[in-house]
Length: 293
Image 1 (cartoon, rainbow, N blue to C red):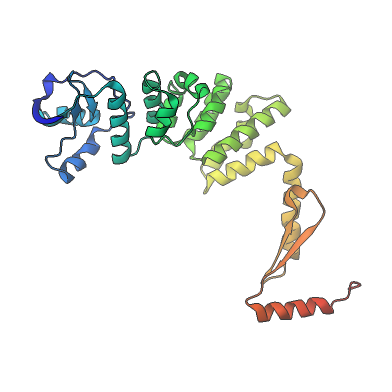
Image 2: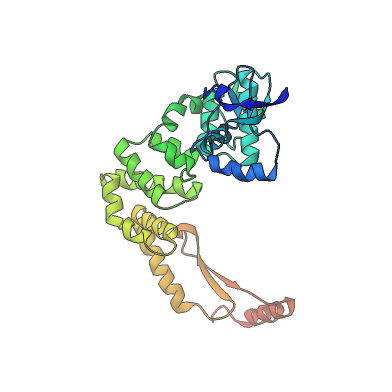
């Protein structure tokens, strides 16, 4: 391993170790200012870039002819791990980049070893590796790279017909949902479509998703609309409950709640006391109330 001043034109531009998407060369400007003289470009003995592909692009973009680089005798597995771990620590890799890394290294290294040596935030298995080609292709890669779709949601979308997949992806592009919300949305849409025998496009149009996206807190409004569409009877019961609670709640420290999903007719009444003394007073008053009252 050695540090040398190297001509950029002599570097092999092979992308064997490159899994960056989207490219963002400009982010290296701050690093060069923070760590002057530190070699941010690593090449192997074959003069291929191991780490710093975006840095190389940034150097070329500003017309630089040479740079201080680190040359190391690395095998392909070590080179891929080095690039992954350095970039993940420096900038944080998006889901698409992590999956692309797995695709490149899985042919060279056991899955258990990859899981141990790389911070992936998901579990590797043969089924996932089998579907990497689909996950990394359009139109999923843009959404994965932008953090608008989690891995579990992406795998669910792969099982959808392409027209339905595009509808859901359009929604996820337009509004950011959590991973758990994404899975719920997919469930609601699929179950509603099965019940009503309608395409997802028709369901989303009937819900007026375009209007909801223009409102404040669109995520919650969209989730509520989809839930009401999937469970219309429950939605009606919930609306009636909210009105009843509004009419009967006593101002102050008293709250009412129904049993989850209205499985029973029980109503829970909660009293909040400021301290033990007030709690004792409330309890004494409740004891004085006879059952007939």
